[in-house]
Length: 392
Ligand code: ARG
Image (tube, rainbow, N blue to C red; front, side, top):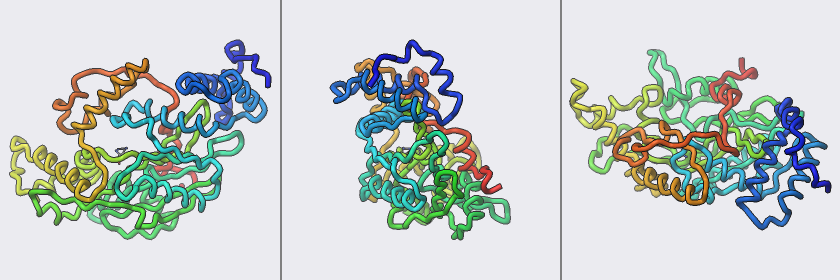
């Protein structure tokens, strides 16, 4: 193998390689391999030799195949580099499941089910990523149209109000047009829409025994249970593209466990989600006659108490924003001791309740783009919103 040209002397390749979107970028490949070999020393194949292999492979085929070690490292570092995520302390323990050889929608469905099984782990949630085949020249990768593997449907009703998750209104229409028989309840788990390599999308139900859900109860206000609220155990993002060393993996669903505020301060509360604050306030008998009673804030805190209490009582992993904030700052300090910069987006890191009483509030963060990373591109966003050519 010719290991001579170390790319630095051939800048023309960097530009020519980005002309076609699915041709692997030499510059990014080299940058990634360099990082991999620096952080994971004592590889069986030295850096220069591996780079030579990859360059030859890209020259011959327009792309290259990551070794399983590169893939696992790349996925973990992509998490480490996710500037919006407060829960990155465990980046190095991410379970990486290599599904690059899976192609048919049926097999993809089976492995997505398996992902949920591994992630749910009877309630002791494990962070998992399943990585399916990447985009390659002339062959687009499979995709899942859902924004998350598990998410609730949303329905516009006759009177203009929304039943279920308003964030899912458009996507729910899409799956209904694809033939899904909607139960039309407030917490209907959407089926998966799987689009294999350039084919028409297919709809698959998730077996209900794989969808762990938690009924919401409150330790001191039993009437909260009468609202019949619930949330699912595993947040598994399925519409972000994982990019490692110039290779795009558009289907690489990943999950962690919930931080309570995601559910108790956003999903159940945002006006364009379940919009439940007035309902919760009424249930608690709060005085809603004036903003100055702070009924919204009081309802919000009690709902968050209920979420944390319910998950814990059900034996499902969840964490609170105080603990996560402290963990994030120790992660940041540890990364800095290791000579690395932690990029963070303040507006995403600071929790949506009690910001100022968490330590992450009281400082600024570096914000730089670091690779590998996860990206939400317009194409994926359009599919999740139901704006795809196949259905319009
Ligand atoms: N915020 C999203 C949700 O509420 C999930 C994002 C990922 N969250 C996580 N804890 N890993 O569904």
